[in-house]
Length: 145
Image (cartoon, rainbow, N blue to C red; front, side, top):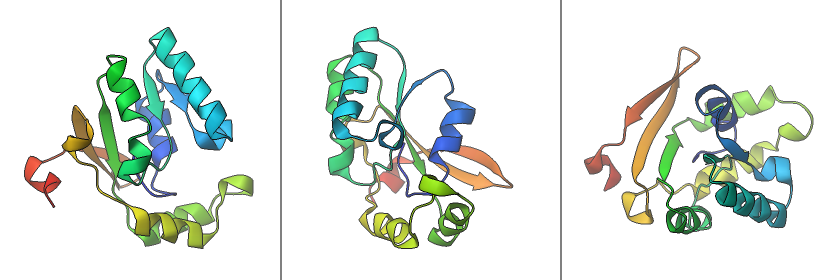
C-alpha cells in the first residue's frame, strides 16, 4: 500500500485484501514487531499486505527485496487522494487513529510516486469515486513522470 494518511489504505485492505496477513506499524507499534511479523508471515508463505503509508522509495525498499527474495509477487496499490480529502477523512477519526493535520501534510510532501524499477511486478492506481474504490492499471508512460 502506498498513500498518505487518510487516503483509504486500511479500508481498501479490509474490502479488497481481507485474505492477506496485515502487517501494519499502526497495529504493531514498533519496527521490531513489524519486522518480526513480516518474517513470520514469509516463513508461513501466506499472502501479505503492508498497510503503512510507504510514501518514499526508502520505506518501500524495507519490504520489496525481502518479498522478492522469498518468491512473492510484489504488487503496489497507489492510493491517489487530494490532501483536502485526506484531511476530511482524518478529521472523522477518533483517538489514536486521528493524527495531527501537519502529519498528513508532511507525509504528502514526502510522497514519491512508485516506479517499476523499485521491484514491483504490478502497480495499480486506486482512487475513491462515489465512496467506492476504483482500481486502474498503472500506465507505463505515467510511471516515467
